[in-house]
Each structure stands twice: as structure tokens, then as C-alpha cells.
Amino acid sequence: MELEKVIMSLADTSGVSGDEEKAAELALSYLKGYTDDCCIKNGNVVGHIGKKGGKSHVLLDAHIDQIGLVVTYITDDGFLKVSNCGGIDRRLLLAQQVTVLGKEPVTGIICAIPPHLSTDESSVPEMNDICIDVGMTKAQAEQVISLGDKIVFAVSCKKMLGDRITGAALDDRCGAAAILRALEILKDKTLNCEVTVLFSTQEEVGERGAKIGVFDIDPDIALAVDVSFALTPDDSELKCGKMGGGCMIGYAPTLDRELSKTLTETAKKNGLPYQTEVMSGETGTNADRFSVNKGGSKAATLSIPLKYMHTPVEVISVSDVENTAQLIAAYLMEVGA
Image (cartoon, rainbow, N blue to C red; front, side, top):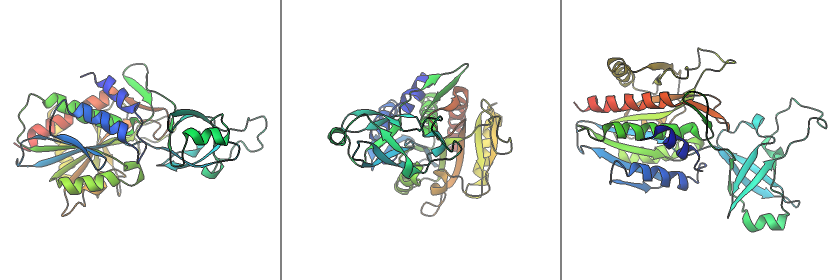
């Protein structure tokens, strides 16, 4: 398995929250390499692996939706008015190149006043002030663009020095890649536990796919594989992990402390680099939905350090994805023993 290639192909496939079909189809095609018992159900990708009825039933989850914009109006001049799908940082929107996913892909530019003409360079635009120039009249635009069409940043993943990758939607396609890599590691192994893979939708708009997915699956244990904040020069080591430092194992009131400790001990036993991530309340991940499913399930987070979250230039280290996969595989080998 070429992990870097899998990460980049997943991240470069469009899948804004609520319209994840292309991302789901690609994730399903990868998952079929490890099980025939998989499908797309209510938008989510679901697959079953291991010993059904085993000692434990473990859910492995990563969300496959990404942040984006949605067309709300076409002005008389042919410009698009938009709103956000997920947590868009409005500071970075101006002068971005985007792709409108209409009847056919349409290139657009988010309008920006030149600094020579601006009277206030420090202000952050409100979403209502954002317009997208698609170079068309209103009549032309309406032929290919409909209200409700999604919009993504027009970027593709690029390699950086070392093992780093930059691109949009690495949150959380790299988590999906980590799960696929763990399945690759385990493909010739015998598992004594039942494993269900969930590539869930609509995490960025309230963990909606995870909520319906976990209710149907009803696991004993649930691991949310997501991303968390990697340290940058302008932030604090108290709040961030270090890129290249391995998987970030979460500790929080909404998580099962014994499960977090078991994952930590598994990392130590197998010589895997890891970091501890302490959260004071909810985690902001699908794990918050897993822990309160039906009668509850033991939930934990395994996070990949990521710089510049929710921007078109997110950055990860492939080694962190690999080490997260190795930890998942090692845990699954032990949990049913």
C-alpha cells in the first residue's frame, strides 16, 4: 500500500458536508480491498472485518466530509453569494480560487478589493459580504450553477520536504487512510474481535453521520481517528502536539479513561511514538457521539497532528499517519485476546 498516494487521492476528492458521494465511493473502493462485507448506507461507508460475535466489537471511524461553501444566491451581475458548510475561517477567503460543483465544475474567484483601494485592511469580512466571480452573466451562470451547489477550494495535495504533505481536506481523509493502512497491516492476521469500519459523513456540521452510524452498529468500543492541532511558531505547546511525534491519544471527560490508558500502554509496548492530548470537555470529534450511543460505548480519540486546520493548506506528516495505523493494528491484535 502506497500510504502517501492513498492520502493524497482521498484528500483530492470532493466531499463537502452533505455531498460526500465521490469521497464515499473512493473510500469504499479502497475498503473493498480488505472485505467484501462493505457498502454505502445512509451516506456512510460501512465495512465489517474480523470475527463476528467475538469477545469485543470495535468501531474504527474517520469522517470523510470536508468544509466548504454553498451557493445561496446569484446576483443580477452574475456573482455568487454563499454561506459556509462547516467551520470556514473567513480571514483567508478573499482572493481564493475555488471550484463550484455545478452541472459541470466552474472555476471562480472570491472577490477582493485591491489594497490600494481599501480603507480598512484589518477587517474580517462577514459571510454576507463574500461574492464569487465566475466570469458569467446571471443567465449564463444559471445554466450550470444551481442554488445549493457546493464549493471547494481549488487546490490539490502537494509533497513538501521530508514526508510532509499539504492540501485541503487532509482533515480527515488522512484519518481514513490511517484506518485503511491498519487493515493492510492486519490483512494476513487472525482477529479475535469483531471490527466495523465507519467512514462517516457530516462531521463538520454536527457529527451527524457518526450519530446514525454508531446507533446502527452498536459497538462495545469506538475509536475516532481524526486530526488535532500541530504546533506552529505562533501557538503554545500546552495546546498542541508536535508534527512527527506520533499519534495523539486523547484524555477527556467524554472519553473512557481506561481505554485511553490501554492505548497508551499498547503504544509503549510496541515502541510506537505517541503524544498525550488532554481535553477539558467534549473533544469536538465523533467520539462525543460514540460515548453516549444507546447504553454507551467506550470511546477514545486517536488524532493525527495537523497544521493550519480548516484552510486550503493543511499540513501533515506521513509518519504520523503510519504510526497511528500501527497503533490501531497493535490494539486490535490485543483487544480480543
